[in-house]
Image 1 (cartoon, rainbow, N blue to C red):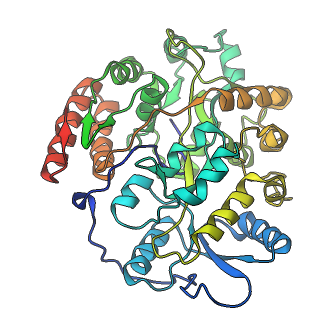
Image 2: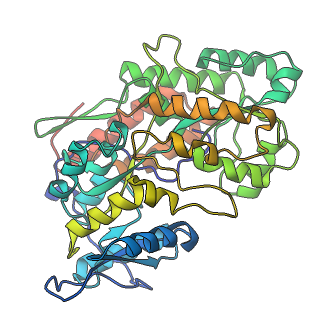
Length: 449
């Protein structure tokens, strides 16, 4: 939704075919260490973990793991950034040398499997699944074709924050449905205020609405991919976007200039922001005018929704192809992300927060620390209820097709035309239907749609 998630990893059942393979030709720079292949070496097994996160968010957890385990040692290797990690991993997997055993996710698992980058660790992960270590909504994002190629680390619960001061100033009720939000937008428009922001480069709002409606653009049947961008669920989501755009209710502030974006959110000229837990601290740190004016509320629902639903895009720690110690890598990843000791070790004193425990069934002991002190003023206590409701209502129907990287890039182009009123949402979806089917056929992948 208006702020893009940390990763756009979606969930799927995926059949790997030769047609999805990608030629790997990248320049390797600064890869750091790998896990090697000598499984008979004396002493503890070293699991090398590549991440571009700041050391303060990962290293203390690895240190705690190392202090409490004798046979496995986690070695954190800092990568420059997301693209650098992707390039480096493709290179070491192609060479077979210096392959790490855990990597922070930089893409969609099915697509990475199609490239031949990941190891099948289903046999290692399944015992933890059977024990109930993970919440149900965190599982599919780590899979391809019903098998695990990464270790589930969960999702960020989705909800909305509104500038309650502005809502109250103009006597507008808190929106409970998307229809309510649109009506609120029409009233706010009279005062020069936008109800939401839809950045021209980010169609995640549409994706999340389709998922919240219970739909997906891809499905599998046997060895055939089924594509449907014009399903009832997709059209229901498109209708919400179209009404927001047609009525001139949304801004189009880009994410490319982050300081300008935050200043705009802080200005009072845009007052409803679908968001996730990880973004709250950033708002608190950067808002100057509106601290204390915001209120956390449940994500608006479709008026005919049978039950409360919050979209949940899970992700996983990748286990690359060529990892010498997959069993130990899975054990370490599970411990660091699902045990009380591991989660507690992630506490950062400067921001008074833990890494969000998105993979576990009950994150309630860590919710209060995820809510900053000043953002919501005297409404801070409401955030706990809203976040836990989002966790309980988390559902994921999203299937990622084998050509989704190219599909998403094309969707970005179409989305930009929609939000600038050069094309309707339905026209864009019809274009995406033809584009996606034609692209799969060109890759000799069985497709129906």
